[in-house]
Image 1 (cartoon, rainbow, N blue to C red):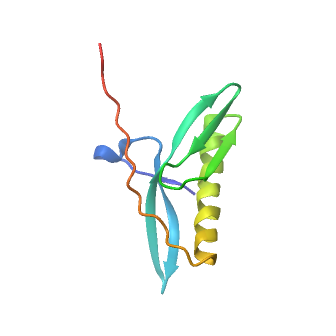
Image 2: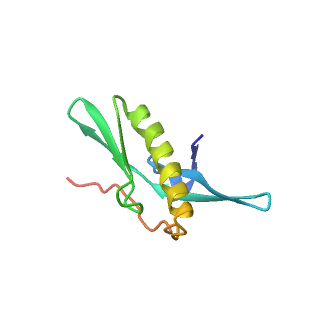
Length: 98
């Protein structure tokens, strides 16, 4: 289940936490930005911090849920291959223009 941040800069809707590791009864959570875009009749999602990790859905919510699953699978694959899990460095901000 995705846990949405709720204060400060963390109010970015497309930002959510996923469980990355469980070590010695300690849950380590990592936050990855996802971008969801309207793509014709469906939605597509990706994470700038996880190249190649993408998902689609008929609705925005479905794309978000599938992206959560894709990130979990991506991280599990990195672990299985003994590859490092990238640190999240992407951010997003809205700007107002007139």
